[in-house]
Length: 195
Image (cartoon, rainbow, N blue to C red):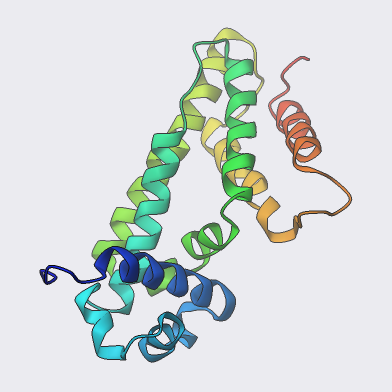
């Protein structure tokens, strides 16, 4: 629906998304109502429908935007497979630590999407996973990696790397640079890449 000239769409729309993200991550999608989101934004519940068709559309938009941006942000270097893998690991850690709430809903709230929306999100996740698998396949082909099954290794590495958001806290025992280095070392060993 078109907004009237002079409206605050450029303010309310982003505030709506930020409030929904915060509430979905804190309480879970199913436990959050549109009325709660509206209260967080400071508007009437009915006003939300000027910005989104419904609660699922809001969740889908958050997930899709997150994955599209992740794919656009990852730029593989022109390098040997081991350097590409290191770059992927470090990028994944940095990107995800900056967005823990988005990561949580993108992985934990898939069950709340209708089949068509689920297929879109799964397709974007597959596109990203394929980037990592291509690196592993190149490393396997050149003898840089020793991986019995590149698809399984891809899934294991993604799960390990993404899991950092479940426990990492800013100001804790390890800083981000240390986390990147340690996760790169674990990934390198997982694919039997030489130092």
